Length: 404
Image 1 (cartoon, rainbow, N blue to C red):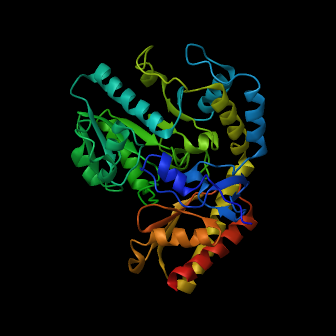
Image 2: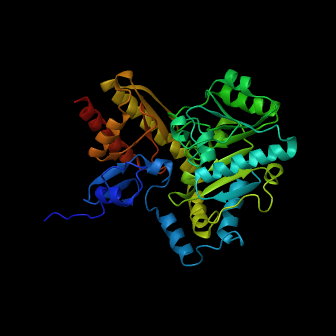
Image 3: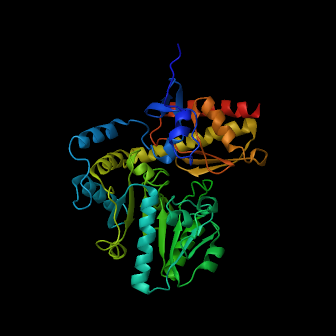
């Protein structure tokens, strides 16, 4: 007799808020770059929990860190500090441009802190006129009301009443339009050094350097949202390192905890000082469990051989994707950097990215979208080559299925 599972989509619809529409497949275990569902069907994971599971599922270094810290200390709040948080912060400042770290629980919280800090810095240093925040269309910075308003997708921010004020958007990779918006009233420019949700769009060298120059000209802060690109995703510890442009504030999450919730905001001392005691906080931010795991992720990722392999694995993806496209001619563009890869569908298949995701799932492959026209891969940064090859074979089967 087939086993029945009371924990299914019907139960989801009964007890969960209706803001998600999950797949009927419910994973129950994972190992490395593979997951298995309730019926023991295997899936190769090119989604990575949306660029979160940077070391795959149940990596032994993370399991060991969780078990070890779980037997020591779970939570103390920020009335006290703790050893894992101090160790992790030290690693981050020693290996980036930053002097100071604020820990939170997610990318949205890290960005919320960054935007509040930028506004407070501007108010204190320059006066009440300097409040304008400029971000980019199709950007994504989280789902709090402040961060979703800064994000350049009105479909996420409309419908909740009056929005936070003095936030404007312009086109990514368009330096002229940004320059037209900026003035001495500009507090900060917020950008992803590679747009993720917006379609996996890389900045040109001219653009990213020009943004930095405009911020310097108008005495505005440059905030890099590295929630998706950070912690090895592009082949550098952080994407700014490969662009040779240093931000004033950087936000990090997703891969930062390898699947355990944690976020961080990094900045310089002269900016950090404006978040004085009592101006911002987080009950769980920097808790010992999250920081112990973050330390373990860092120790695995921040090795030259691991970071070098990310570029090689990226090339493996690109080579095979181009070979697949020679057969079927359905990809208008294959782009991205490191192991954040976007595959834009040809106009014939616009609006159908979700169909490819569904077909891939049926073939035992988990992938993502980045809008209605782009497929997105964000796999484990240590995914074995054989899993890349097998996953791409399953992708080709999914393509055949969609083409009929």
